[in-house]
Structures are given as C-alpha cells and as structure tokens.
Amino acid sequence: MNTQTTMSNIQFPDFGAFLESIKENNRKMDEKAEQYYKEQKERDAKWEAERREQDAKWEAERREREAKWEAERKEREAKWKEREAKWDAERKEANEQINKTLAEIKRLREDNSSKWGRMIEALCTPTALKLFKERNIGIERISQECRTANLWGEDKMEVDVMYENGHVLVATEVKMTCSAEDVRYFLSQMERFKEYFPGLADRTVYGAVAAIKFNDGADTFARRKGLFVIPFTGEDTFTLLDPTIPPKAF
Image (cartoon, rainbow, N blue to C red):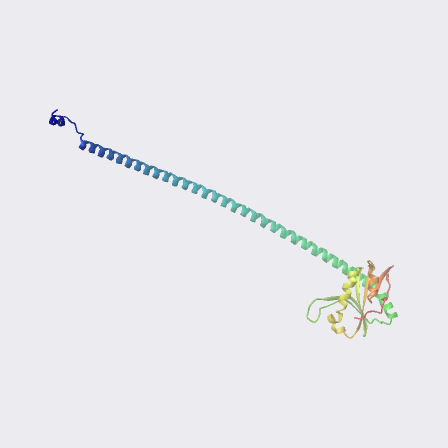
C-alpha cells in the first residue's frame, strides 16, 4: 500500500470551527446567565417593592388602629372624668346637705338639752339651797353655764351650776339622763377644776350631779366617788344624797 496515498485520504476535524462553536456556546450561556440575573434582580426589586408597600400598608393600618384606640381611650377617659366630676359634685352636695342636717339636729339637740338643763337647774336649785344649808354649806351665790379655758388657752371646761359662798363651792353637772360614763368624765374634769378656774383656787371645791334619771347605778357610782347626787323624786321635786364616803374635795 502506498503510504502517501493513505495519509491524503484521512479527514481531520476543523478545530477552528470547534473552538468557535465552544465560544458561541459560552457566549450564549453568559447571555442566559446575564438575562437570568437581570430577571432575578427585577423580581427581587419587585418583591422588595411589594414588601415595602405591604409593610407601609400594615404600618398605616397599625397607626390607624392605634390612633382609633387612643381616640376611644381619650373619649372614655373624658366620659369617666365627666361622670366623676358629676359624682363628686353630687357627693359634695349630698355631704353638704347631710352636714347641714346633722348640724341642725345637733343644734336642736343642744337647744333642747339646754332648755331641759335650765329647767332641771331651776327645779333642783331650791332643794339644793335648802339641803346644802342643812349640811352647813350656806349658798350665797349661784352661777350658771360657767365656761373657761386653762392658763395656756387649751381645752375648755364648762360647769352647769356653781353653788358657792366665800369658802366652799359645789360644782354641779346637770343631765337629763346620767350614765356612769358621764360621771367618769365629770370627775376627770373636776380633777383639773382649779387649773381652769384659778380664781377659785382658794375655795374648798366639791362636786355634784343632778339628773332626772340615773342609768345603771350611775347615782350609786357617783356617791362612791365622793360626789353629791341630786336625783329627781317626782312631783317636780329633787332630793340631795350625800356621798357614801367623805365628800371629795377637788
């Protein structure tokens, strides 16, 4: 076989065309990749825009809801304040009316008590004058509703009736109804009598309790504490009961 003839018949590939083909394929792949990245970027931008739009919408809705809730809260608070102001005004008016009524009741009670006290004083005084005289306590002067404060202007003491002469004084508490607690309070006041009435400090001071009615043995209690007791005995008359111990000098 002729070697030269054989080599001339062999077909070699076109490497140039092959390389161009590869380049063309690479170019197309780059174009596709670029197109894909472009489209992806556009999709991302669209999604980001949609997300921002949705976020803005949600934020606007949230603010709208919060503004609505805040407006409703302020409206409720305004209504509550209005109701509270109305209730306060009504409560104040009611309290003023109650206080006015209580003050009137107190005034009527005090007025009634004062009237009863003066009546009891008027009724028991003749008996007291006579019976104290029998006990060698001659009464030269009668003072009613004696009020004073101590040397420092603190507190006050009131004595309904004072039967006195130049040496002896009988401070008398007058009650419509007298209880043991009334007696205790009178005794506590009498312990400070000369502090409240320093001008009478040179007198021998005794205490007495006069009443229409004594509750729960208050008269016996008073006598055991050294007080004179002037009870109502009926028929507009009173009597004088001596203490069951020597009269207490304050």
